[in-house]
Image 1 (tube, rainbow, N blue to C red):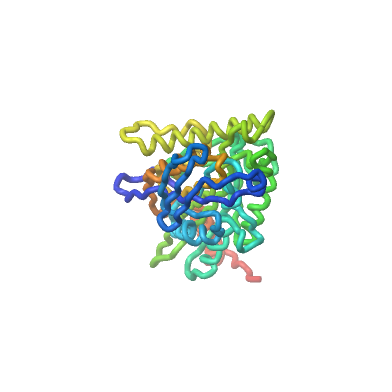
Image 2 (tube, rainbow, N blue to C red):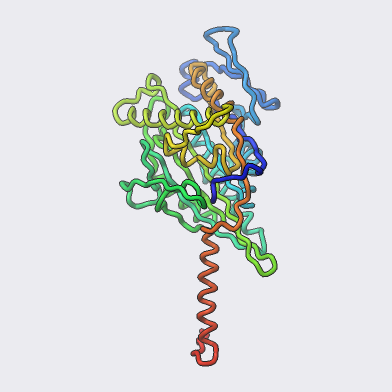
Length: 384
């Protein structure tokens, strides 16, 4: 879909929500205290520095979810409307950001086999196919891709060749995409869940002192939804793309005790998150002439999602423990800046690269061949 947007398109802000996980078992055993006061009604969070009594910082967001929040609370309130707009032909992006071990992957993935524990990605599958199955008179085509950015290299999580590295390309029609990335047509929740599960088994994870199964890469699950509606004698095609991004967590080596390969991974993770922060900073600054999207592959892939043609929701994941005070402040400042980004989403109508259009053209071509063979002088095709 084209990434360029008209100056006349209505702007809307990136929506930012915050989710706090409960204290972990190790934190409880270590006697850690909660340094957060969360007011879910007002959407505010107060972060208290328990080592300096009387010192605190206050933040306000579109929505905040405390330690008792459920997966369905987040999805129904925040993400369901965005996925509905993708079904209408808008681009949408959901991304989870935060310190390592704060529950980003749980928020995005959860436990797909448990209705109560299911995360954003599997819940979106359910919503998409329920809508398609209930809609009459409209053709749909759903495609799924899954990639990760590991140490600034793009990997196709659905490819059998784990060593192949992929390049980015940019066109006026499609914006920034990954050249030759696998894309699978899926016709049910079961099929798209299988795609997700295959990708998850190939994703880079490892143990650190902050997280037993720490994501060592940024992962993006891409769902492309094409729909074709006949109006009179003409077919109208709309294409929505949903990017669901599970960012690797920011890390401090002094806490994760990462060394060797884990340390190199952490360095690359922090560099790309820093590049993302620079893009967010540039987008909200007045009189900025240059947005440094090209500083990392992550920011280039999120170019439409931040300041472009997309509806975007950022969920900032934080932990309540007092010893993570500095990291929590950093995450909330990051999120607070992001809510000032203005996007210009629009419905992607009749794009040139729609797969449904290619299928329809092929059907028309075959139909003409059949018709020519039934005309006088032609040989009639036998029906089976």
